[in-house]
Length: 425
Ligand code: ADP
Ligand code: MG
Image (tube, rainbow, N blue to C red; front, side, top):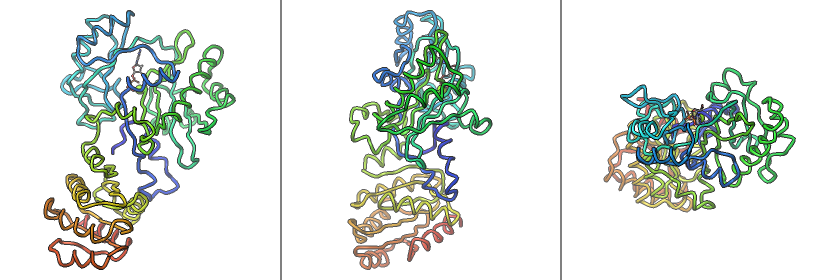
């Protein structure tokens, strides 16, 4: 997974304690939703937002403008990436992803310029993302643009609320150039944000009077929202103070921690598969836990802990993992075959390290799955295998007698060194 939100990139570049560790930088698996969906949830949770309507056609966008009844609205492309305001449509560079409109006809024209087109922003990569819907939102009377983000601080084992006076600017940039302008407050998930913490932040942001009251309501509500929905990240950039001293979320980037999705079955409906990495969708369909990364060494491992340490040791020996993949404790042949398909379909993958500790899954199951996968998928890159645990001797024998071209490894260090060398050469 390539981080699509600035806050994600910022958080993943956090880890100075373990500069070598790939796992420390591995993203939490999380489900993204669109801005308009985030705002619908905000409204329910008492986080102030402006009125808006989603539109899938240009006519719907024009009708939405009329429904809002104001003289100004904003037509916003809905994609799972930020930077839309400055982003441009491929082949129509004057068309931005966020457009201010003053009539239903202008709303129609803006929607026509966006729907079905590909929007490129600094967070989408060059290939961009196709806009399938737009959000037509009431125009806001902006007095101040602030920044607000919440993530789980893994070192502090608590959520952390971050605010900044530098709204509208990417948080990475603020962190790099003016880190003193980011103010942080950790909070206890059971208690939420305390009143004194809001006062502290308001003072730093230079908020007083009616706006301070609005900030109190807003910050308490957004922190409660973060916990109640098991978010991995909530980012509001810009967080706006209006001319009349109200505080509203003008943008909403929300991701939910995948590990908690069983508690929020209703949120699954908000998933937009067209926005997700196809290989990750395939993996989750087969019950595999897979995250695509940017390195060149594919990893096939059972157990999340072993998968993390495998990534770390590859990194330690100078390599870069192409993915995180946990085939699970009870992996079967079909899952392992699918796992190989997914790994080998990544053009960056220059070698695969199979690191299996047979506990519940037997090494013989894995070995026969490997042989099966080699027949159906075909290995076109070096394959290093480290097997240990239940029925390991039989498993190794099966591999040795097969015609699969395997580089055997005796232990995890040996395996890491061998795959790093093989992938490089
Ligand atoms: P992105 O972060 O993807 O660029 P935003 O939702 O932050 O998208 O919108 C970009 C900019 O557009 C905001 O910083 C704000 O200045 C302006 N904007 C967004 N929504 C509205 C609105 N409802 N009214 C007025 N301006 C808006
Ligand atoms: Mg924004």
